Image 1 (tube, rainbow, N blue to C red):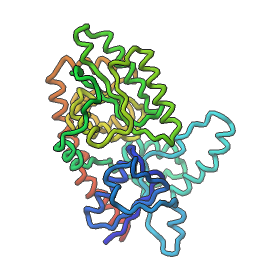
Image 2 (image 1 turned 30 degrees about the horizontal axis):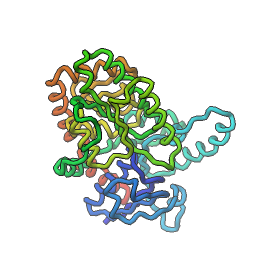
Image 3 (image 1 turned 30 degrees about the vertical axis):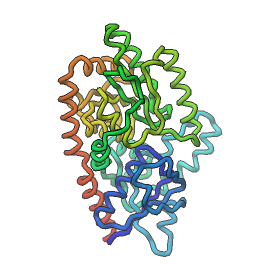
Image 4 (image 1 turned 120 degrees about the vertical axis):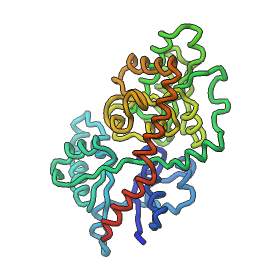
Length: 359
């Protein structure tokens, strides 16, 4: 039996964290012994599957594993190069990050195997780590643990009192409260849409902005306030609900009850939200760059748009005024997830890599 240890810095609520949990569940189902090691874990701010396992709170890195007395094989799953997640607007910041960036590239190259979450990330990996041009990077798409979604759907709870009862058309933005997620685009698109609609249709349109929120993260706190202020400036207070760290049941209920998900980040590494939405038969309106180019079939399971309010609002209006389009895209989306992003396919492929490493 293979013994697998996952190392992740902060096991909170986000796409990367969802991937780690699903991968752990997948390998456990294959009979592997699995542990997750993390530098921070909060039982009140985590995915439900992590409430039972033993999660040692530690911080380790690839060189430690490679140089230990009993050398461990290392599989590195690149969600996105860390150095691209930090801005360098000042000379001091550039100098501070230079040795960290060098260390990231050197230690990444020490892994026995490197996987990436999309072809987009594979290209970014090559463009970022120039000295690793000879390293093979296999694409392993994140999967969806559909059992969790099916279970939450069967329970059918989660939306009571979240938004006005007269809301008949629901749009959903589902992302962490971070500026790079461009959540303001969803608010701007709603404002443009409402200006174009006849008065009798406006009252039933509502947007829920939901996502991971951690009070320890200053940006989460600040950006939540910024978005509420933007909604007020756009006169959207009565047609927008802000929801912080929704429960699993709330998230699934929102996905199943929405006309569309508005997925606003540009150059997103992969993005699990579109996959979640498609499995719930909810069309996705997303920016036409990054991971959504691989997860969404444009015109079939949703719309890929330029990152501006006008383009998003046109797609939103189509889904409002053409009910058959919502139905057909929803059904096509679920089939696409079952074909390309099933947990079974992910489990088989990941387990194959683990077996190859252990030989």
